[in-house]
Amino acid sequence: MSRPEFHSRPLHPTLLRLDRLATHLATDDDVLAVLGLGSAGEETHRFDEHSDIDFFVVVDTARAKERYLRDPGWLGGFGGHVAYSFVNDPHGRKALFADGLFVEYAVFTPDELAPLPVLGARVVWSRDDYDPLTSSPTPPSPTAIDTVDFHVDEALTNLYVGLHRELRGERLTAMRFIQVYAVDRVLALVRLDPASRLDHPDHFESTRRIEQADLPTDLPLHRMVPGYEHNVDAARAVLGWLTTHHVTHPVMTRAIIRLLDEH
Image 1 (cartoon, helix red, strand yellow):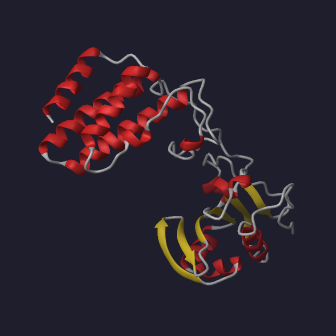
Image 2 (tube, one colour):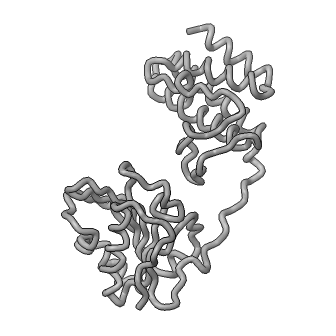
Image 3 (cartoon, one colour):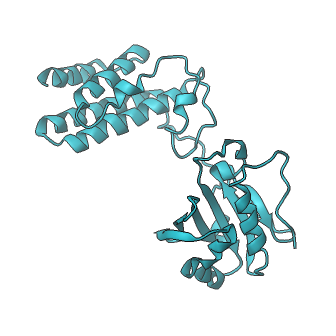
């Protein structure tokens, strides 16, 4: 039976609790591996006092999986008392310990894990010669729609729809179109800019660490995302950034400006 691996640099004391859990689970022959994800994965240097622990447990059979999902008592292997937990996914739970440790986990069989593109995972422990990441597929390449033109046009149409909903009095959905969907497209444009230097970009969440990015252009997020009562100001800020840094279609640009003038 293999033991949790030794690390080339010291781990944050809280993250060491995942090694403690792995040692506990290694005593169950049904468990094949424990994987750390996110800042508990390959990028352990990012783990700090505000981090939670995301992890996968790999078990050998569907029956073992059902057992681990039904009774989360094995989380006691972290040490401490689970004060709150709930099923947040068919494969796992989120849980808060009484001492403040927050974890999110999923349990998979090898067949279930194999087709998943497990990015940045770290094998905390695995049994014998089992390598849980051997067959992990390469993430799909960006599609043709992941282009500057697409993100610019999508942002413009998000602004257009959002401003119409603001005029109708649907302020919450307007906020989402203007301050969430359109800003997501702005972040995609930032990512596509070869001059951008992103701080450990997250493949699943573009907002992560954007404040620490080294960008070639100003990104006035405080004006793009001012809050529920300021959708029009946010739309002006997003449109201003788009027209300053990219070529926007004149028809849609004028249509958005007309809507801004109506407010």
